[in-house]
Image (cartoon, rainbow, N blue to C red; front, side, top):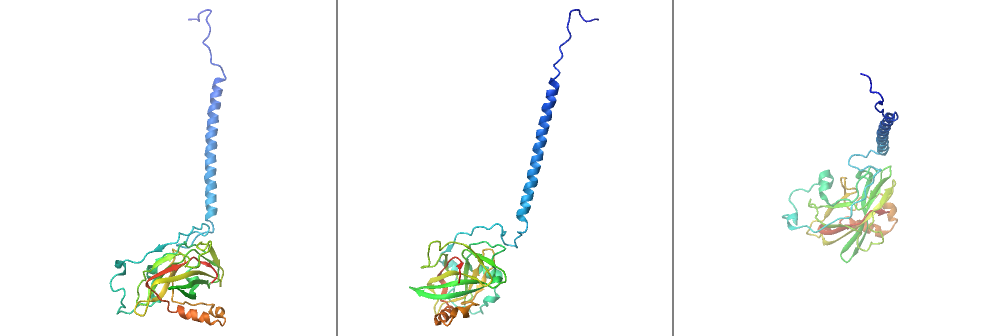
Length: 288
């Protein structure tokens, strides 16, 4: 049949409509591709930065990265021991031989610590193998004894100390001393910033000192006296042992003919620190 006369053909949609839909789809695809490219670039950039941060800064085991130095812990304290902590016969000399301090293992030296060091170790930290420890100076006032714990860098490279050292004691009868202990500048030495924890770099031959004070239940003729200090330079390290007064490599230069220096060294050979003494140690400061 023919088309009805006078009729008109069905309307045809305008031509531009289809191209507009194609352009809309294309723009969406381009935007998605751009987003993918941007995310990929961001991941590559972050990976490169992470590599740069890690390059050349591998710490030795047990140390923080030298490029990220943690703030030291706050100073600590511990109260007097209880009777169960002391145990039986703590005030009597044993019949068995007492091990020499030099024979104590790393775990046994760690067990001596009454307080841990406040600063974490880093690759730059001084270790027991880098230094010598000794006591310097001696004074007495109203039942308090005062000295300085000194650390001297005897290695060929600079190293650092920071914060308060960890301390503990080993008695003449082989006991672990259960002091009432505190990390605080000793009495009479407080000053503005005196309890701060600065990072100190010790060049070869340089030293730092921490104030030391003991009082309270002092050792006597019939009680156990200190045989060795355990001194921890950083809280993740094994402590070193210091048999008072320690080996001062600069003793001759320091004495300079002053008889009081020799007297102080003699006093420090047998400090009257006992099981129930109160011991305070300050933060490391330059000099010594």
